Image 1 (cartoon, protein in one colour):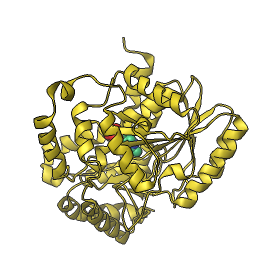
Image 2 (cartoon, protein in one colour):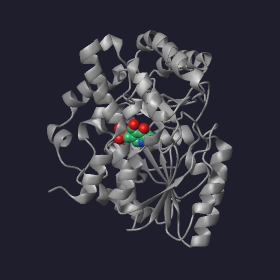
Image 3 (tube, protein in one colour):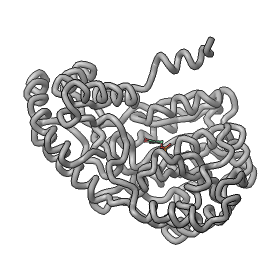
Image 4 (cartoon, helix red, strand yellow):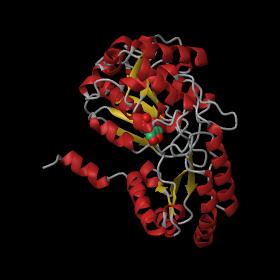
Length: 396
Ligand code: PLP
């Protein structure tokens, strides 16, 4: 018999994955070219050429025992140093290799970070709408998720509500900017205010409240937006990064955690993360990918492709009358459902449009449209969106 906890998780399922499966079924019936699957955040831009060149070069030129062997749980020192150097250059971060722990993507990194700091019953604050997997990551370590309600239409974090929610059991706050699902990028003022509240509340608590920053979309920004680097605003930060989106490598499972020396108990925290990587069963991040990242640390994906998709889809949907904040980052539109969310998703599906409900992000009444798809598919989908608008907007 499977565990009660797993039974519950399986029952609640992942709406994103379910919609993805649905898309495959519809494609068999109607043909792939007639199904507009906007459900999954799977990058549509191929990994940059430099990544494949690095794979060839690393496999050809690295000692096989080093390439395929066990290593330090926190990863190759040379890779970690290359990442530290890059962050120092870009953000004046002051990292050494010791501040970086290689992880199995952002998901692996978040689980490692939470495992390292959360005691049974500790509270972790998140801001709706949020990536639904946080529920699992927090419950994996016996933590309790505290959800701050969404703040539409701007969808910036409600920091006053956060401050009120902080109590004796608060261990960490998770933020995600650029945000999945809204595309909102938190600016300097927001981060400064956030940092100040956490400083004040940590002093009051007599112990650090860690800020976990989930940043897989850090480089995916538009219109000159910038995602500010957090160490400037708060020292008790654990930065989780991933190459899944920025280098289009989600299947390769590679990312890192960065923890500054200034974080409370930094040395122990870094050691704990290294041990957590082992005891969670990852042991270490994939070795080949670490060496590839070392060579591609400053390689960038072609953001202009996502930007064109964003402009086309945002422009068309708002023109049709849908309400949606203009995303400054990531590759999602978070559209207000003109009718009940479930009904809207069903209506969209009748036009072969697949989207994910806001409920999956603890923000009912919206749908997420992942525009990391081909430009042609978006163009083709517009007549279906027009019919959907005619059918649903009149019922508002
Ligand atoms: N965090 C957010 C906000 C995400 O959107 C995702 C993936 O979509 C992840 C974490 C997990 O990323 P990874 O593939 O690096 O584990």
